[in-house]
Image 1 (spheres, rainbow, N blue to C red):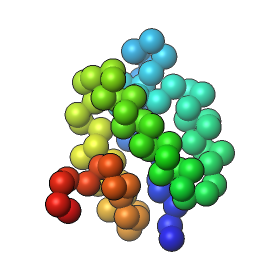
Image 2 (image 1 turned 90 degrees about the horizontal axis):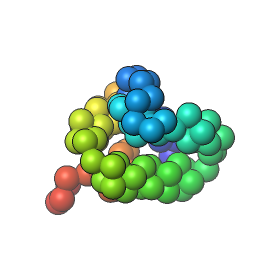
Image 3 (image 1 turned 120 degrees about the vertical axis):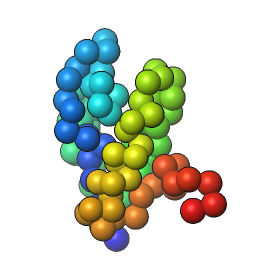
Image 4 (image 1 turned 120 degrees about the horizontal axis):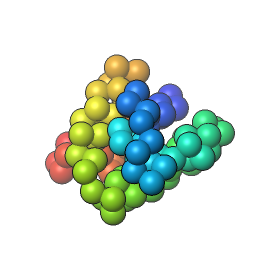
Length: 86
């Protein structure tokens, strides 16, 4: 099983109280994600990030960009990102 890629979508502008406007991660979260080696830990991190984005709002652009990144790297996207029924 291939590892999930970083949730970063190459925007990297930390304007929302230290959260990136592209992916919602803080610099500490980006560092933490890089340290996660097990696929289930990475998947749990992505799930946490989806909930964080939902709480913060204005991140509807992230999921399509991340799905595209996963497809490009030939990695199965986390279930929380897939459209219902996919």
